[in-house]
Image 1 (cartoon, rainbow, N blue to C red):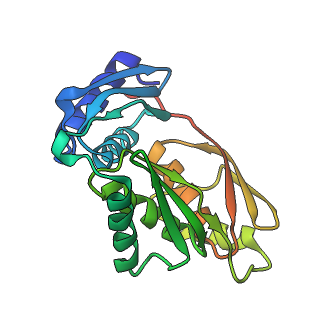
Image 2: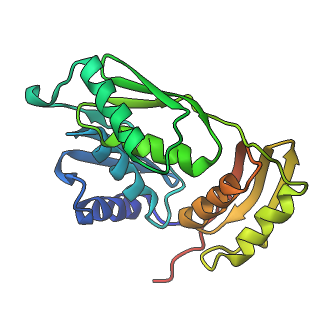
Length: 221
């Protein structure tokens, strides 16, 4: 287990190295591998990127993102104008289906509608986060697949085996309709994300219950 003090330094270094993040205004804390980010950022996209950067660090079990988006006066937008820009961004991206809609209240974007795949929902969220003036994004998109394979477990396990970044021998799957539960242990946050993303991307999966535990091997000094 990496000491909390060492983990704080590693996360701070990763934030500093990321050109999409202004790390000077971000404070990092850690307790038993659980990292908390506090401070202010200039956009919702920067908040998103800061969390992703922290999650990349070996030893991070979870990230509690308490960063606040602080917009300059010239970046603040009327709700109707912000909604129009979000809808245009969604419309222009070929990965996002036209069944996804957006509404805005006090700068908070709520995405609604249906998608057939998790990557479509993820793409819509990322696009909304990237629109200037957005303060937060709430995901209310439902996954509704047109078809469901007979054996989700087999599809997911085969996807895991094809992934060189994932050691899947300690992972277990249970299914109920399109709902999938993933249990077991992985050795890094990156492995965790690979396993969960593979499950979410399998045709027929409507939700994933993430019960994975990240257990790190001790560093050698």
